[in-house]
Image 1 (spheres, rainbow, N blue to C red):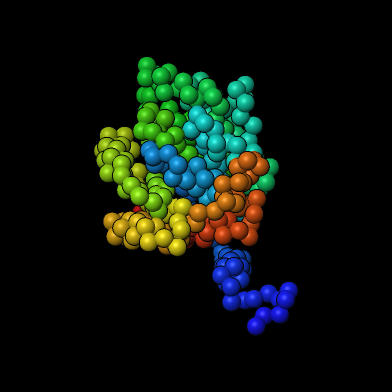
Image 2: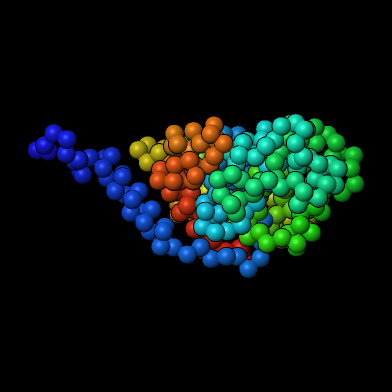
Length: 295
């Protein structure tokens, strides 16, 4: 019998803390390989609430915490990625809207995240909500972001650029597809997880054929995982069966800390580095770094 006040190492909480400590120590021993050239990864899922923005900002923060130079382009009019990265994005702030619509250079608009020196954000403001309509009449409307990003990439030394898309398949998302070389899809471990995925994959194929032949689905990340439920395990098994090469081994758990972090203008990686969510995103980032860009 455990004496009063003693720490019982056989309890579920103690086992979880021991596991997190072990994983965190393992991460400290890893070396994250630097890519040979800038990897531009579009994070997309037309379904809302799957952890898309959370995944974009936390993978970026995880890589930046390991010394990589990382930029997050917030292409969602809601501006949640900008909030999580502590970037100013009031309506009068220069933003990605000015880049896409007004041909403003990216380098004058990028903001450094206050938490990690090598993490940067190209913020979104409310003006981006009208960009879909304005793009309709513009020349080369699908390539506005790539036209701005290509020279910026050539002149900068970023290792990774993540593009956070709106939860839709409109012109902003198409711009993200055209500007990127890789697609990362977060899929929540819940009912209807694969619903709509076939349409998204069809759209990626259309972009490959007509606008960006180098675009590839490189990564699928399972999010909101609760190992206590049969459903979560079944969904994870189903997704792995359909996409054996693309799915990361790492699972992102359901976590209060992950949800809390943006309200403090932070990612979970900086808000609570020792939490299960933070450790899981670091492990996912390590997988992405070690896999490298698809050839």
